[in-house]
Length: 425
Image (cartoon, rainbow, N blue to C red):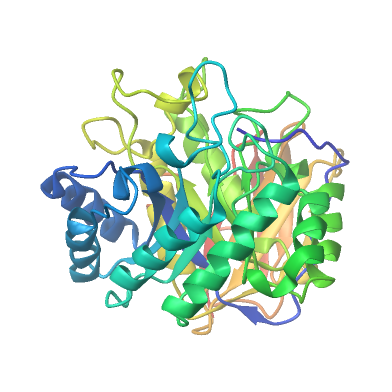
């Protein structure tokens, strides 16, 4: 689910230098899931050119009763991921009944704070120690969406105690692993300031989630999601040691009249917008495949249709869109060159969005669209190019003829349908 922070749409400022951009996919697996099925998902990761997994390591799964740890399946899962070339970035959560405060009258305790921090510390220590030998376990995120009551039935102070306790346990057991603040439902500067005030060294990255146009009012769109709240978040992060910022969960559901082409176009817009945002160094895709109708989920019908593939793993159009952009962003680093692009347009210019990315090999990708009226624009690319090709939402490249002296001529834009152009140096 996502926050509702509206502000006037604006182009994020261009980054001055190069940055590494990591793409990840979130796909939760219950303990004892058939690893043959997991391997099929990992094969899809590889097809996308994405080599990072995010998902839950549930406390309730791996310590079902006090002091009885069960990491056998998890050990095999991590080994499978390693053999598939996949880095693991799990989040820890889901409090077991025996360890929970038990605050709800309905008996639901999975999002409760632990009743005793010592129990939590012992579990985190045992888990990090057991997984230390798997070098592909890169980080541990502490709980998930904790800044809303639906996912954390406690106070900010209680969360901070859980965060600091886990951080100390992880750093003692596996100093190589990063510790990550739980992914917030929206960019929440107040939550970050509170955590920083307790222990700024307890965590190494600040993540939040972004579901504009699925779980937001109509006024909240991709183009304005990173508005005032995001700028305030960056200020809060800077006061905490200038940590990297991750959008580690984002997606768009093919439900309520939204087509698979709408989803593909959304992903082109979202990846371009979020990749261009200052300080964002990881984007987490939710998720690889739609949920089975009989799978329990929080969040209503939309949660069942967020996949890049259908339940049977047949690709939606967005799979091909993300695969193309994922392979482009898989470079050693990228540079955002938005500020250097010149766009000539008659009429409505306020709704134009333009992002230009460069790889170290000189290849560039232009993503341009309007969320207003249809328009025809001319675009000048700084430094010129030797060849230009249209890139469809299916990830196909087609020759582009209308170019001259570094200009792309007569680029036709339709509302919310990005045009992508691959440019050779």
